[in-house]
Image (cartoon, rainbow, N blue to C red; front, side, top):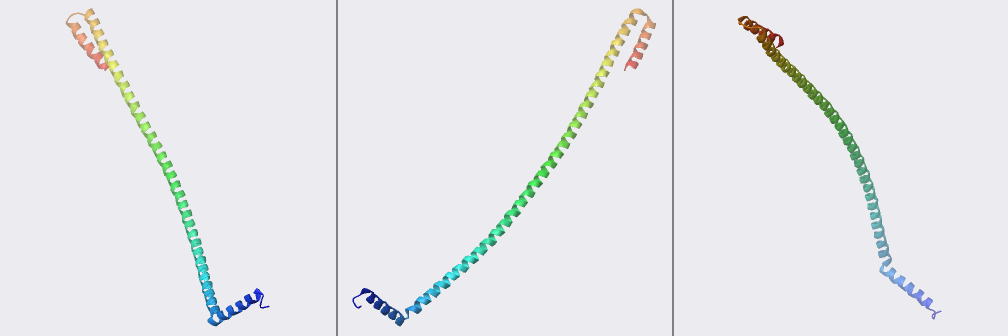
Length: 161
């Protein structure tokens, strides 16, 4: 039995345990294990707390994102409505402008027609007066002719103008 190595390993183990017990190593080891357990528990609690805070922040940021998306949709809808309103106003203004320009052009055309008609009448009257004076001056002679000629020319001018 003293020759076997297992016996001497067992004796050395018992002596080592005795020395540990004498110096209170088991209390130190237990205290170290308790401290390590407390530290692990504190880290675990911190990790749980951080996880809860992260979940709260995530929910808050998701709510903010959804709010920002709703606000962006509202802005887009408002911009579309404004664009449609502005386009409708521009169309109305353009139609009014075209109508005014058309009316102005028509009135200018009517004025030009009236002026042309007056010019034609004046030219016709002048031609008629000239023709009448030529005819009368060739057919009627003397002071009576001059008087009739002046009277006829005056009447023609009054009627044609």
